[in-house]
Image 1 (cartoon, rainbow, N blue to C red):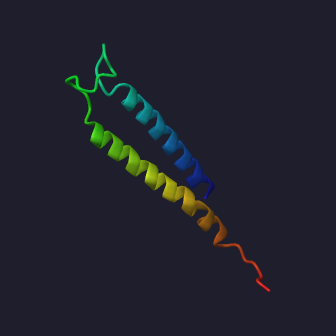
Image 2 (image 1 turned 90 degrees about the vertical axis):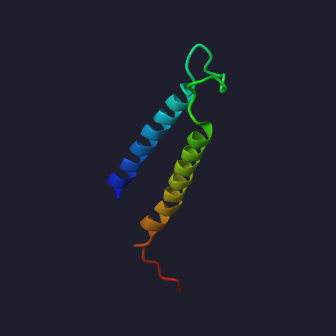
Length: 77
């Protein structure tokens, strides 16, 4: 389980770095802020992909405590 957690952390870190670089270089120089310039990435696809990855990572983060606590045996009375 611990290796899976570290693998997830590494995967999210690599994805975050790639997302930052992609957003920073989505349009060519000298005007990277001009989204109407030719050669810019498809912003809808970029935001949709980032949103899907964020939602999936949130679901994994929500599921982690469930997976960890499923083996805990507690007496209820």
